[in-house]
Image 1 (cartoon, rainbow, N blue to C red):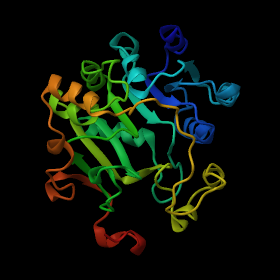
Image 2 (cartoon, rainbow, N blue to C red; image 1 turned 180 degrees about the vertical axis):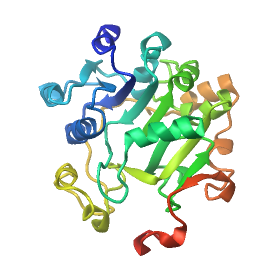
Image 3 (cartoon, rainbow, N blue to C red; image 1 turned 60 degrees about the horizontal axis):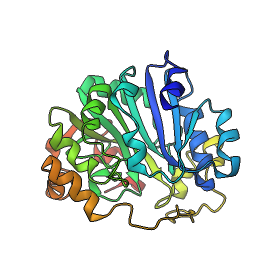
Image 4 (cartoon, one colour; image 1 turned 90 degrees about the horizontal axis):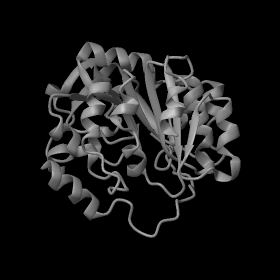
Length: 297
């Protein structure tokens, strides 16, 4: 079924996958993100959902041009394992996007996906991510440098891979790792020839943990502002319905499964280094003093 869905748009050069959709609160982000960033014919869009959500997702996605794959009770890692080399090989890039991430198309931190792809070519990167408000680890956060920063690992919120980088990632994927744990920090160590970077010149919002501040909202277009939740409050998380679980989706056993198999060390990826090391800066749009006062480090 998945192969037949992707075959419908063989002309698209890139693939964007929204992983683990199903919560009604995130439908607005999915539709807005696709319409503003992936609807120009260069991207094939696939939404992988653990529930059809009472029919809410399907009609909402019809206007976005996304294909919908529903696999009841599937988890993040199991969806990733469905993206086999045969399925992704026709595409030049593969983007993995969380359902609760808001990608602004306007404002101070606006994301230009074509600019990200051009940056990947110019800097010979295997994967890139905008910085992330609401990330779990410091190297992924918006660090207000105005720079493209080389990193050792990319925590997945909105990550774009080259085809070759994703094919290397696919070697690690295992459906038994239901939470998809460990792939972020093992990728760089399993596939060391691929350079990774986080771009502080743009940012996305992990809406479950962080939302745009008021000064940022004032720089957004009316369309972007309309996609913010009705419960929006600056720097406050909103209430998201949780996927019913009977176990921890990111259990230590899952992390150990990946780490042992690929000889990875979590601290090497995310802890034992300084993301503000000047040696990590690849390209800057402005020196720190040129950024707005609200952005000062």
